[in-house]
Image (cartoon, rainbow, N blue to C red; front, side, top):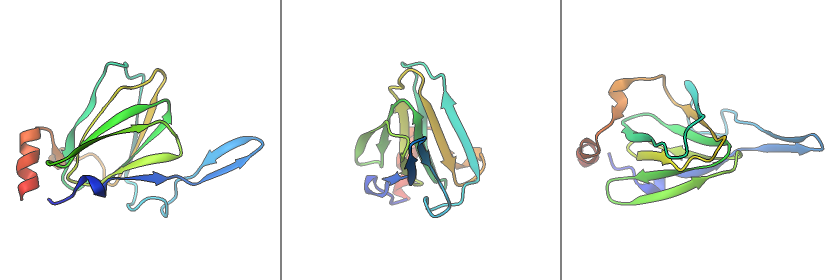
Length: 136
């Protein structure tokens, strides 16, 4: 799979602001996939590590609802750390990108919107297997 770091992007989530505060809205026009699964990480210890895998077909939008965390992404040739700390900015991760999430702040909530339901066969959990997959 030939996806690259450049295929990962920050998506601006539309906001509505008035004297009562901010409202962020994710609709089908906001992200380039149909949402089939939603989950969130919370009460993650600051020294914990999540992710450590890639997906063959799954798209994900990762949103820091509260607090902050870092996402390390790799495409087999390059790597990049992206710090997420604004609830109106989500990280779009395309298939064929390795991800690791760490450096969770206290009280952090990480929302993940996914393009399909859980499917273990879509996961690549070993980095060497990931590199072999990228060569296909």
